[in-house]
Amino acid sequence: MPPEAERLVVDRALCIGSGLCAATAPRHFLLAADRRSIARPDAGAPDADAADAMALCPVEAISLVPGAGVAPA
Ligand code: SF4
Image 1 (tube, rainbow, N blue to C red):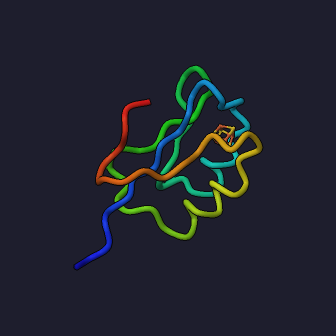
Image 2 (spheres, protein in one colour):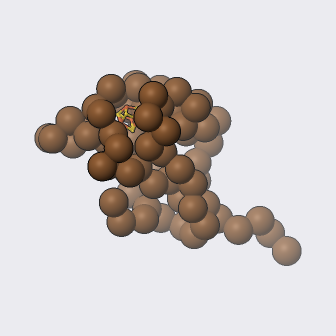
């Protein structure tokens, strides 16, 4: 049985707009007009860069949840 797909979620209430995720994993994250991050809906499966971004986020606002695509913010 293949592993279940995971998707990235940014807790925008926690995000302080450091930009580290977008700089580290631009395929997965971008800063919206309000300077808070969102997970790109077309980025595909999380990769090593996404994992690095999760580790670097100063407020631990990025997480993985089961399922494909992007969870609502
Ligand atoms: S690294 Fe964390 S705090 Fe910084 S923009 Fe990304 S989600 Fe927001």
